[in-house]
Image (cartoon, rainbow, N blue to C red; front, side):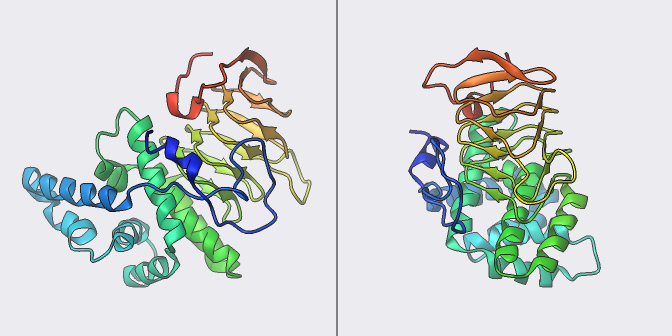
Amino acid sequence: MTGAQEVAALSLTEETGMPKSTGLGLAEQQPPSLDNASVWAVIRAEAAKLAVGEPILRRLLATEVTDATGDNEIIARVLAARLSVTQVETGNLLDLILATLTDDIMRKVEADLAAVRERDPACTTFLHALLNLKGFHALQTHRIAHALWNAGRPEIATWLANLASRVFGPDIHPAARIGASIMLDHGSGIVIGETALIEHEVSILQNVTLGGTGKETGDRHPKIRRGVMIGAGAKILGNIEIGAFSKIAAGSVVLKAVPEHCTVAGVPATVVRIHRADEIPAETMDQNI
């Protein structure tokens, strides 16, 4: 079983009242029980090796990885360094992130690292994902902002979400609920609305919008079920459900609910193919219709 597939065994301790699904509902599941010790041990070993091969990066790698005293401190140092573009001190950002990084969030971070490492052929190491992929950085910053939002701190949560959008590209509302083993490939141009729900093991490519259809209020954004892949430039609009293990073809505009185990394409999108029951589009990343 791969690290991404292990997501199916995990439980996410999200807020109550989450919608159930025939897939992997966030209300029912937990983040993947990956061997977190080995993930971070590999990252430290990769950093030590890179420091020898690229001396110009030695200080950065020591500051962000090898000198960190804990796994949570590694991800906190990486995010704080990249978000330090305002008048807020890097140390204050680091303290805010560290104070918010629960064991539950760390399990999701590890599952996301595994997802990127397995699904992105351009990602050859865990360290590469940790240091260089802005989609990964944006997603982990969202996890911090979401925790702050749920803790009754909407202003700092919104400020952090806006900062992440300016630095990394994706615009993710801090209230959006996102599972584990997620890949935001490239990250550029991704927009995820306030009441959106993304279950585990989902892959989203650049310029995807999970948006509303106008000025409606309340629950107004899409619900993306387990194992879905959303192709580049796709727009999914309204409080509609994208069924588990389905694929949204690049450039599609989806205005109606999508059944499980199928591919939809077009403007507006329609079903063009039914999948085998064992197909997981989020993992295969096959862009063909």
